Amino acid sequence: MIIIGGGLGGLSTGCYARMNGYRTQVFEMHEIPGGSCTGWDRGDFTFDWCVSWLLGNGPGNEMYQIWLELGALQGKEMRHFDVFNIVRGRDGREVRFYSDPDRLEAHLLGISPADAAPIREFCDGIRTFRRALTVYPFLKPVGLMGRIERWRMLASFLPYLTTIRRSITVLMTDFAQRFRDPLLREAFNFILYEKHPAFPVLPFYFQLASHANQAAGVPEGGSLGLARSVEQRYRRLGGEITYNAKVEEILVEGDRAVGVRLSDGREFRADIVVSAADGHTTVMKLLKGRYLNDTYRRLYTSLIDEPGQLSPGYVSLFLGLRKPFPEGDPCTTYLMTDRQAGELTGIRCPSVNVQFRTRHYPELAPRDSTIVFATYFSDIGPWRALSEGPEQSSRVRRGEELHTLPVKHGREYLAAKRRVRNTISSFLDERFPGFKDAVAVADVSTPLTQVRYTGVYDGTFPGWNPFVEGSETVEQEIKRNGPVLPGLANFYLSGVWATIGGLIRAAAAGRHVMHFICRDDGREFTASIDDSESAPTHLIIPVDRPTLPTEAAEPAEPVGSAEPTTTVTTGALA
Image 1 (cartoon, one colour):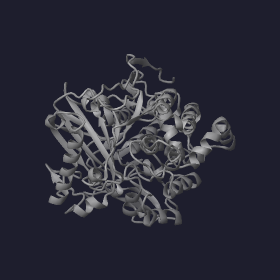
Image 2 (cartoon, rainbow, N blue to C red; image 1 turned 90 degrees about the horizontal axis):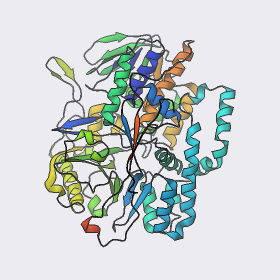
Image 3 (cartoon, one colour; image 1 turned 120 degrees about the horizontal axis):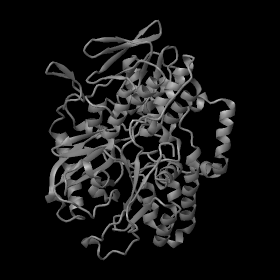
Image 4 (tube, one colour; image 1 turned 30 degrees about the vertical axis):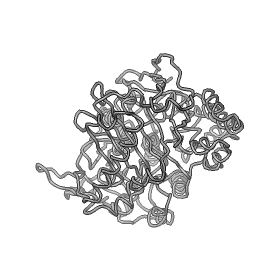
């Protein structure tokens, strides 16, 4: 089996293929694993780009089993904050979205007793979803479930059906309008860091319930550490991976996928080809637009370019500071004025999410220093308009062809990146005295950076936007026909473009595609938990922020409890 792409989807596919007896070769165009699950060094700082919360990193759900099978968590500390996000209004007031629904309810009622009805409804929904997570299916694709399996699955959801049905039919933008307090009315849209206009209430329940169950924290070592752990599991299973290897074409003979051709002209043959690259690259470039039914043709020739169908890209600012900022919260979404946001190229909504990333990953920075990670949703169009030259450029260095080297985008593009740095740094300096003077290292990435490193269509992350036509069409097509293309034998799709969602979906896609391949080859699917290291431990971290001098006159808000952090060791199958 040849697998295209060494992101989490490709690595997961390789792991499960090896567990089921397939010889595998992964081809990855970058020089490191992980795809978008990545980080990079700047001086003695490591800038972690991806994981702000990892669904399934704690027990009590099927997601956890997948991560253990992939060896992603073992031997590590899982860190869980007691606040998911803080939304800070333009007037300085803030809403703390506590993980615990009882604590959240008390906090919200303290802000606005007049909003008791929607507050209690929302917190009751989180309580319901905390129980529902135990039965949510991740291990086996629904399309391969037999009639009895489906009935059992549906029966397990019956106690939660009313809440699920209501939450998937009401947009959060509409639910938030029920609040009388203007801050709550706006803040609820930013629970998940950014504003997601197409999202119903359901994903907000799902994420907060997972966080409350200590199953949506962050893993020690960060994003690249997570990817390297899965890569090591893949290699221990006997899999092979080749880096700096860009696939240019999927070889087809007699309507059967038989291998791949790399950019340097080399060809590799296989019995099965799985693409975990982005969907557009796979079907329109590597396969030249062949083997498209009406559904896939519409998805990849028209729907993909319609507004809102793809998840937006990100602009990210990393700052390495030679000074500790203990008053910095792990995660805060700041609502900005239009004037402030006007300095940020491509911004979709006047807000910026700021994480004091050393609260998540202290091991990625020197002692007595701080990493700040600030992001906002951005379309790629404004950045393309400023850019000159190619978006990707392969060049030979020391006899080896490399595919993710820097490219020159021109002066206007660089000026826009500087404005991002200066605007956000000045914004934070007003709130944290001495902030700008402490900056030692800075780096800005844009959707074009995503294109350079991963080749993903329009710099989107992670792919199809959930809860809109494109994503629902993909889900229906794969439930109906599996992760395949019509008329092309021995070829399968994997990764986030063959499913909907983030990292856990990418990891689950590898498991799911192997279910289909095993079925087609008449094999019984099998998987096992990695026992090469000890079970992960779990650390609960209170978010308790001292009052800043500039906030002394503001009304007091409830803050995190002062109880000590708690470390818990969970068994591998707990």
